[in-house]
Every structure is written in structure tokens, then in C-alpha cells.
Length: 254
Ligand code: NDP
Ligand code: 8X3
Image (cartoon, rainbow, N blue to C red; front, side, top):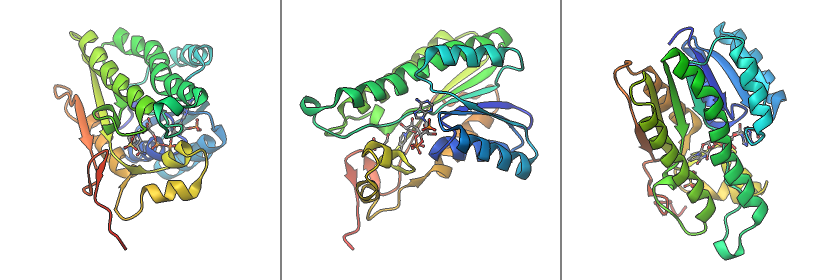
């Protein structure tokens, strides 16, 4: 893995940030993309100092197709990424479909589905040209089973699963692998974002059981990426032991 170039969207927090640390620890060079570039710059400095790798911090909103095009044009001037981790994503709101908020819906669909498409459409051709690469999409258990009030978030993650499958089929005959890593409840900023900054509601989501940590998912992503080239891990669902489905979670009473 040493010297491989890894592009991570949503690297400023949670799973993306943990992936950045995991891959840097293995000697990979990094392209870190997200909107909060102050955080990315801090992470870049930290990883370069600690692991001696080279990292680039790129302020990027994956929803902005023009910006993604500019980003890809810059990328094309250098080496193409060996690994693309399509991680940027979010849930916004948790409400009955018939009471849903249009802005929340746009935010989720534009980020989780169209953002992933924007980045993939512009980066995967570089891999095709070189006939090597690995796309790792961060889906969710929410892309396998719908839960009450999950509606639009579920739909976006079902879409991610369909897109992973589609990419996999369309890349047959190439050496490019496509994997979907589908976590269950992982303690990151995810719930705070979902509940629009309500820290108390976010905290309650993880109460009474041990959720996954971002590092648990980063370990899985790293395993998938470092499997021998003839081994393609197509999908992986990872849940906390206390969680058996999106709506079956054992919580301690005390
Ligand atoms: P966090 O909120 O901790 O991190 C989300 C990351 O996505 C941030 O770095 C954020 O950066 C980035 N992001 C959001 N919108 C955009 C955008 N428009 N353009 C670029 N980057 C963006 O959540 P997680 O780490 O938990 O989430 C990462 C992925 O994992 C998501 O796809 C999520 O759906 C998925 N997931 C999470 C689970 C969980 O329980 N936590 C379970 C299953 C899947 P910034 O705000 O700086 O742009
Ligand atoms: C995030 C996990 O179960 O909160 O995708 O939807 S869940």
C-alpha cells in the first residue's frame, strides 16, 4: 500500500478522517476533500508530520459539479488516484415522509447520490485509462433495510448500493475493483448533522450500547483496499454487536 495515492471525500470528520489516518499510517499519499478546508489543512499537517506521507487538502463541495470538474482537471495534471473513497455523505432530518423538509431532501440526494456520481464520473476515467484502481463507496445498512422516518436517507443509500453494483458491472474487463462498505451505527458527527446540530438528540442515538467507531470502518476499508489484486470484496455490512438491523438495537436500561 505504501506510496499509493488515495482520494477521500468527506475527509474532514468521522469515517473519512479515520480512513485518512489509517491509510497514512500505511504510507499512502492522500488527497483530502471536503468543504471545511481548515480542518483538512490541520489533518494534512498532522499526517505529513506523523507518517512522512504527502497530503493535499482540497476544499470541495461534491454537490458542485463545476467545482468537481475543476478539481478533476487539476488532478489530471498529476498522478491519478489509485483508490477513491466516496465517503462524503449525510442524513439531514428524521421525519415522516409526508412531513419531510424539501431542503433536507435536496441536501441528502445532492450529496449522497449526485455528489458520488459527480466525483466518480470525473475520477474513474483516469483509472480506466490506466486500467487500475479501486473505488470504495461508503453505503450504509440503511441501503439494505428501510427504517421508520428514514425514507429519503434510505433511498439515497439504496441508490449508492445500486450505483456500486452498476459501476462493478460496467467496469468488467478492467482491473478496477468496486467495493461497497455498509456500516451500521457509527459514532461520528453523523447524528449531530442529522439532528441539525442538536447535540443532546445526537448523544441519545448512541445511548445504552457500544456503537462502532470511525476507526472500525476505516480498518474494514483498509482491509478491502489492501486485498490482493485478484480479490474483489464487493460488499461488506458492518454492525455494532448490539445492533442486528437498523431497528433492532439492544440498549442497556441503566
Ligand atoms: P460525519 O458527519 O462525521 O462526516 C461526514 C463527512 O462528509 C464530513 O467530512 C463532511 O465534511 C463531508 N461532507 C458532507 N457533505 C459534503 C459535501 N457536500 N461535499 C464534501 N464533503 C461533504 O459523518 P460520517 O463520517 O459518519 O459519514 C461518512 C459517510 O458514512 C456518509 O456517507 C454516511 O452516510 C456514511 N454512514 C455513516 C454511518 C454512521 O452511523 N455514522 C453509518 C452508515 C453510513 P464537510 O462538512 O467539511 O464538507
Ligand atoms: C447511518 C446508519 O442506521 O443511522 O447510515 O441509518 S443509520
